[in-house]
Picture 1 (cartoon, rainbow, N blue to C red):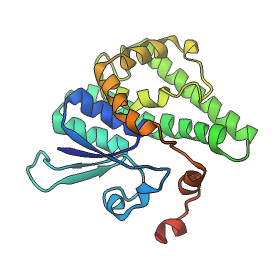
Picture 2: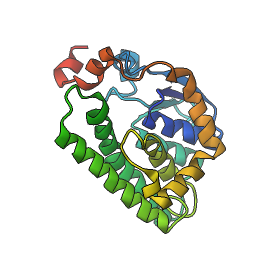
Picture 3: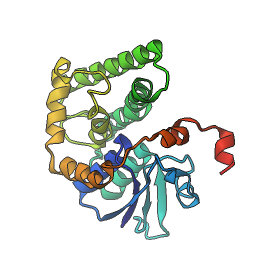
Length: 234
């Protein structure tokens, strides 16, 4: 059984997408990031970076004690290796999947996240910062569009964890001030992933929590005002 610590954000959706596609049994433990659930001691014990998602695998492949994993990219790799799904065994194809997985966790996610922050949440609208991250998001959309011109999915002709990693960060394209019509290959891929039963089921799992605001005014202080001193004082 997979115990999933989750909130319906792009990184949270990555993991439910995998779990639904793979047909794994899992329980969702909501981590309301606007209420500060990510700072509870029991969550920090498995996710020391106070970020969700995180998982606990109560039945790991080696038959030993439960294994906890934090960081969405690491979780996708762990689950792919556990199940043998969505990660090629061929060394060359596997390398391509890993490249694009790390492209997302090191590029698309952080840049789109800063786009969201300065465009939506920052109390002061700093034009330079907004332009910087909107433009960088646009560049990354272009990188992905060029890749998808040459292949059906992000890392080749088979659906993989690279697609699961990237898709949720494209879903909020409007608030990232992008236009999918400018990226025809990306749009074709996006529509294909959106129509997959696993994607539909994964996003449905987040609906019960979506009526609660992800970021309240109190939540902004919890999410955006942290330093090492704040963390150590908890």
